[in-house]
Length: 149
Image (cartoon, rainbow, N blue to C red):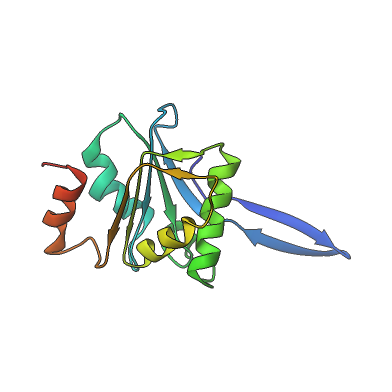
């Protein structure tokens, strides 16, 4: 499922549009799932290019566009708690109960930290990166994730 989805609700003859967070869901036929949460000023496409494209096709990648970023740019950012709730809802909706790896950088790391409050999702490995994934820290990131390019 790739793209922005919306839900139209009618309340007393008025229409309200509720937008949902956009996700890249790559290699959905694979069992082992990796969650990648981008830093501020990045996007799901940025994480795909930087990490998922380098790691290969053997994993399923769930890569959200946080509110006010990428394809979710029209969503208003409220809090890391709200972002984690939307990611959790997506995981539950797609019957994902276990993540082989969850990675969050900068803002994405704080969102990932909030996601740990949901006890029905199991995390095998967690990687938090304080800084953004771009610039000099990229080599450190590649080492941490075992990507050798």
